Length: 488
Ligand SMILES: [Zn+2]
Image 1: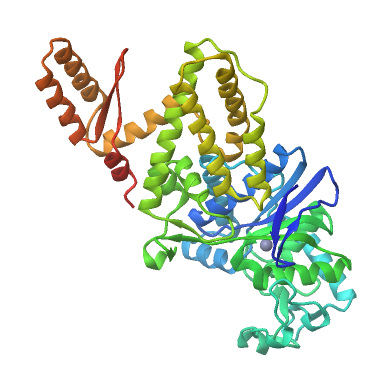
Image 2: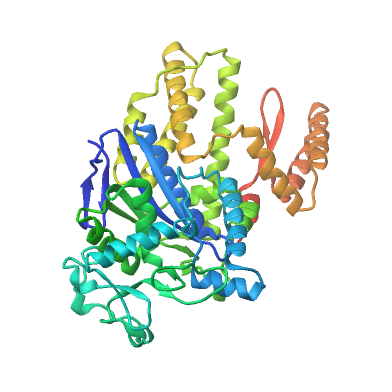
């Protein structure tokens, strides 16, 4: 069976059939760039990037568009507080957002259009809607969309026009024919954020931006349109109304909506003091832990960040890298060569999970099972059959872990990063730990086991546990140490 997607438009989990069997076109609403990006933006960018990566893994060509909204009230307000022009502010924030995405290992979309670069197209789009009777200039000079003329309006959010929440009263007074109509072009004069138009100087309404950028790049009809659940109404409803009024055909065929991000089950907001910027989160937790946490939830549900979740994630990541290191050592020690064959059963299980509405928690269970099987094989005496098993699992992991961008670093790099972070937190040094380890080795060779145990306990009290093998003694962080590292 192929990919199935929960489609907000149909309300069902639909079989996904792209218009062009080889080429998938996807648009996701991006960031309004008035401030630094936060974990909510990270979650959304990571999800749609993974969708694109998985579809490419399946052999499709994918064109993925994620826009920047760089014309908006919030940008204008914040720019004036900072004493800079709105476009100057959005330039800075786009630059910061690109840096954030890089630090999360989110690949750039194929197209990252900015509203300010599409003003002539937006104007001619609105003129076309006006010519078709769907748009009119109100008494205040602004241009509005005639919602009641679009008979299927409300089909995405499942509302009747008669039950719609009316627009804010201020808008009604400004000159709309009908309170449910929404602005396509707002006439006003804000230096640096307005453009000349047939209706006077002004700027585009929010919804028209996405309709225009999507159709300019992907065409009037495309496969997947995504965004946060909070965008279903009015943003996406209005996008559909405008786009289908203009083209007469279907706009996006599958509407995918992700849940929102919460911190300790509360909505993230500056006033609740639980606002986490991407910059801070990557510094404090690392990009893999942020990703791991996201993969614990289905994209449609709200994704919660908590100290408990981070702790679980970090202990799992720690154990993933322990297995990765063990496999590398095992392959080297036994002089095995790489396999070109992906383990067929686990490949199927992974694809089944992802094809089931991008079920990341299920996919993660498959990854955990692969790692567990690898450990079981390495616990046994080596023979040709189980070496081949292990190598085909390794081949599979080499292909699927990069989709999730997890567990693919050299394990030593991961351990070094986590360990340094912990040692700094505890004001300890790597040299101190190594010296203690050496002292203990010496005690053991001298059969001074009491002293050796004392050193072991001293290290454990600092969150460092020792692992003795025949060849050497190494160290890792205790559970408690991992917990301390991720306390929110
Ligand atoms: Zn949008």
